[in-house]
Length: 83
Image (tube, rainbow, N blue to C red; front, side):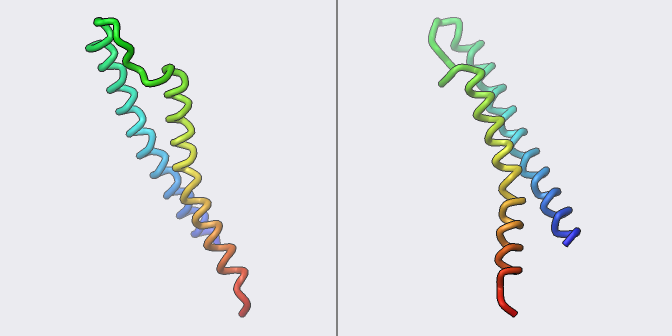
């Protein structure tokens, strides 16, 4: 049981790291796009920057919880079976 929790923890951190990496790339691209296109007076951000950051943070949290939930559901199904 302990090894399952450790494996889920590592999967969770890996998923959160990947999602954070992708979110940082998207935010950097938005920032660069605002420098390139913002001088013309056009709006670059699809929403407010704070809303974008919140959306990315929720995505990171959701990707971190997915492996833990998947393992917990599989464990509950396994323990529910009648022997």
